[in-house]
Each structure stands twice: as C-alpha cells, then as structure tokens.
Length: 636
Ligand SMILES: C[C@H](O)[C@H](C)C(=O)SCCNC(=O)CCNC(=O)[C@H](O)C(C)(C)COP(=O)([O-])OP(=O)([O-])OC[C@H]1O[C@@H](n2cnc3c(N)ncnc32)[C@H](O)[C@@H]1OP(=O)([O-])[O-]
Image (cartoon, rainbow, N blue to C red; front, side, top):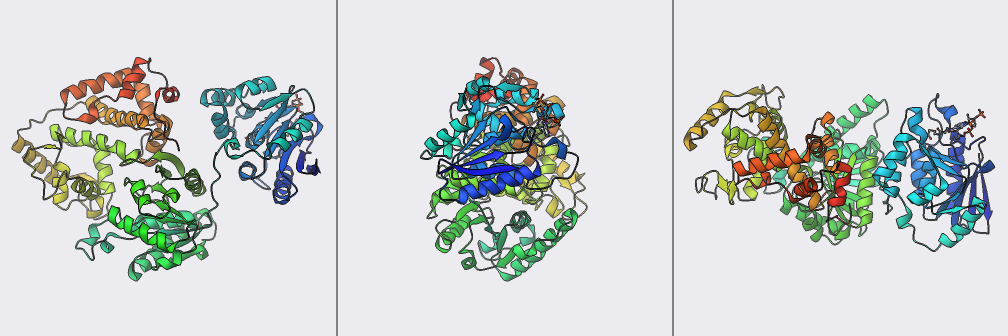
C-alpha cells in the first residue's frame, strides 16, 4: 500500500500505492507509519519524499471505509508525527491532493506540485469537515479568510493558485517526484522549525508528571475555620485524574499523610467512576502518592496546584529547583498570579509556564496556557500539546493579573455589584450565583491583599471609594458575616445546606441592602434589563479590547473561546467579543460613552482606544480586528 525505497543514496521515497487515487485506507496509513519509522530511524536517510503512484498524490480518506468502524492507525497522530519528525519531508503532488491527501501534504515541510495538479478540501461536499488538521493548518499557512473560503466551498484549486496563495513552494512542468527529490537534498541543511505549519516548535513528550496540591493550612501552621477554606487539593485532584486517564504516570504530592490519604481515596474514586462511565479499566497503576518532594527528582514536568498564595508558590518552586532535574518543566496552576515572578525564583525561568485549569479540572474543558516573557517556545508548545492530550480546549494567553478570563471578569462583576447598590436585588442572577459557586472569600482575599479592604482600610474615608475610583463594599460585608457562598450554605443567596446548589433569595441580604442604602442615602430605582445587560457585558467586552491591545490574547476569537468554555457564556451569543460585534461596535461605543459619563469614577466603562479605532475604521468584522492591533505578544 506504500512502496519504500532509498534514492540518491540518502532520500527515502515513499510512494502511496492504493489505486485508483491512493486514498488513505487503513493499510495505506499503516504503510506510511512504517515507512516513516524506517526513514526517521535509518541514519543513511537525510530527507523524505512522499508521492503517489499513477500520477495521483492522494484523494483523501478512503470513502470505501466510511461505513465501518475505524481500523488501523488513526490519521491525525500519524500526520502530526510526520510534521514533528527531524528530517525534512517533501510532498510531490501530481494529479490530486484532496481532503486527507491535502492534509497529508500540509504536514510535509515542503510541497512541490505539478502544473496540472489540483488541491482542495472537498469534505464539505460530503457533509463533513476536514478532520485531519486541515482546518488548523491551512489558516496558519494562508490566513483565515483564504482558508475559510477553501474549506467552506470545497473548491479545487490549480497548482498555480496554490503557489500564489503560498500553499506550495514550487510548481513544475517536469516529474514532480524527481523535482521533489532534488529539492529534498537541498533542504537537508535547513532548519525545520519554521516549516512546521501547526507548530513552529516541537513540544516535548511528557511521560511522567507530578501534581502538587497543598492546602492553605501548610502556609501559616494550622488556622481556624479550615472547613471554609476551599481545598486547592480539589484542583490538584482534578488535574491528576486528567493526566492519568490519558496514560501519563502521575506522582501526586501532598504536604502531610492525612491529606495525602484523603487525596488518594478521592483520586482513585474519581478515576474508577470515570473509567466505568467510559467502559475502560481505570489506570490506577499510573498513580503514586507521596509527601516527599524527593520523589519528584525524575519527572518530566511538575504542575504546581498549591494554595493561591505567591509566597507559598515561590517557596515551592525554590524547593523544586533543588530537587528536580535541570530539564524538568515547571507549570503553575494559578488563576491570576504573576507567572514571571514565579519563574524568577527558579533556576530555569525559560522552563516555567502557567497552566490555568478551571474547576473542576477533570470536567471543565478550558485551559489557559499562560506565556511568561521568559517562557521558551518549546515550553509553551509542550504545555499546549499536553493540554490537548488531556482533552482541553487550550488558549495561549499573556501574563498579566487575571490573564484573560479573570481579568475581564473584574469589570463585569464590578458592574453587577454597582447595579446591586443602585437598584433592585434579584436581577443579575448570573454574576451572584456564579460568585456563590466560586466562593466569595476568594475575591475578598484578593481585595484585602491589594489594599481595597481589610482592617487597615478606613471604609468611611472616603466612603464607597478606594484608590481614586468607585468601590462597592457590599461583597466585603457579606464575607464578614461568614457567608462565602455555596460551600458555607450562605452567600448572596441561601442554600438548603452547606454545599447545596438550590439557591433561594435570602431576606437577610435584603435587610443588609436596605440598611446599607439608607446609611448612604441611596434611593433605589428600577434598572432596566437593557441597562443591566449593557453595563455588565459591554464592560466585559471593553476589557477584552484592552486585552487585545496589550497583546495578552492573540485574537478576539481566543477571548470568546475562553468565555464559552471556561465561564459558561451562552453559546448562541458566540462569546463577548462576537456579541459586541453583533450588537454593533458603534452602539457598544456609544453606550459605554454614555455610561462612563454617568459614572466617571468607573474607569472600566471608559471606551478602550481599540474599540474607538475599530469604529473609526468602519467596524470591521471580528476576524479583521487583528489587522488593527499593534502589540502582538511574541509567543501567541
Ligand atoms: C480526513 C479527511 O479530512 C476527510 C475525512 C477526507 O479525506 S474525506 C475524502 C475527501 N476526498 C474526496 O472527497 C475525493 C472524492 N473524489 C473525487 O473528488 C474524485 O473522485 C477525484 C479524486 C477528483 C477523481 O475524479 P475523476 O472524475 O477523475 O474520477 P472518479 O470517477 O470520480 O473517481 C475515480 C475512482 O476513484 C475512486 N475514488 C475517488 N476518490 C476516492 C476516495 N477518497 N476514496 C476511495 N475511492 C475514491 C472513485 O470511486 C472511482 O472509483 P471507480 O468508480 O473507478 O471504482
């Protein structure tokens, strides 16, 4: 199904032989995998050429196999491995390169096409989408608009058009295979990195990882009230489950035996339930539990998921630097702390990256991969590919307080609390239910640390203002009553029990609000649904525009993915940035200006310069915004 021969003493020529169009049947995939293995392991081979017999490169997936279950090696990992290989691979395209055949060509490092060749992704005409990386690689090669056009029409293009678009490197009138062999010989000395369309950098293979979950009590000795402190062991447990179920061996670390034992039982229980649901056997043999950091000396990667406290995290990373091999990657699971500050305390800042999981980590799809200024491309690529292996929707983001998701949440929550202060309670269900679920003490602690509240801050001097801007102390007052949300059975709402999910309005909160409003002479007024939506969502999107300007997210679509997969943004609205574009940027700008005028002490309502610029340019569609953004993070 594929012929393997050595030509010119150093080029492995792999010829697909599956008439009539060399479709990628299971036998062909198997033969390609074997041939690539030979080529990559044979020291005589310095380059590879892939071509098809009888003047046809490859017609894509073998339609004759569509009816049955998938047999043989799956196509995607096979193609990924070709792209990731360390020897240059050249596609010699004659006849057709369609569907999976085109995708095969896209993973080759160079593409030579005969002048009569035709290329395309016709999947849409079969009612499916390109499934072997075409939707990812083609946009990276030729840009989103051109790629979308080809993917959505299924149109075949000529070799000449492919050359013009930048899909092929050379068009020839001669035998494409012979030209490709010569080309391959010249490519041997050239670096491959930039030729890998999906990933300019090859990720490391991760076989073993350590997950560290250390609860808060280890920070300052034993505190009171531990029942109320969210156990960040929860995060560590979820991450350990994610790793083990995809076959990575995991060492789970806790700080003391009792916690370790609880963790062990929970992780095993979670894995067993998960395996039962999926009808497989639980991979318990991959798990090890320890309280000794020394046990981490041989792991490839560590995911630190200790309590969200900079001092504790720094201490952990200093210790890890002493214990782990110099090449071990360090990942921090933080929801907003400075990844670079952590990198700075290690002996390997280039090997440090943020992996921001969302709770519960074994369920939530989103993963923000936080690229610090010193994180190397290989480190980022490894975190991205590990996330993919764990089944996550991954978005690479820059390093700033709160990264993308949580940074945008701040103005959104602020608006909701200001609205609560001004108006009738019971409207902004989303924000308050979410806060109850996440735990109100989390934000409270952050505000205390940033000097916005706490025993050192005089709440009345001046009242309802902090650091020169409007501040609403109601969330602090709720926390001061020990109401931390669902886990304590009381928060913005009341619940039937600790950890209960059935939220009911609580008359005590109503009383608290009435007392508060009368103390400050606030006349509650009716607030329209429109104002609630506009103030919350436009403030959210406005911060998104700032994030784009700052180069913290590479594109608006990334922000939308974060909000859809991590924050429950309604799918049919497409995410905050798409929603803003649907409403119309001009209207968003006009409303923000209006609200900022009414609330000049709320800087988040001030329209961002990028929003203004986009409106001035005639409000282009979301996919064109990138052209108007100056700063681009080098890694994203
Ligand atoms: C992972 C990936 O993302 C996804 C999931 C995929 O890849 S999905 C698959 C995508 N690929 C396609 O949709 C290509 C469909 N084929 C064509 O467009 C055309 O066939 C052609 C290639 C442009 C040639 O046209 P033609 O006019 O010169 O001759 P023909 O008479 O049509 O075809 C000649 C012979 O080849 C057979 N044939 C063609 N394509 C085939 C294919 N993909 N698999 C199996 N057989 C195929 C066809 O049945 C006929 O057989 P027989 O009747 O002689 O026994």
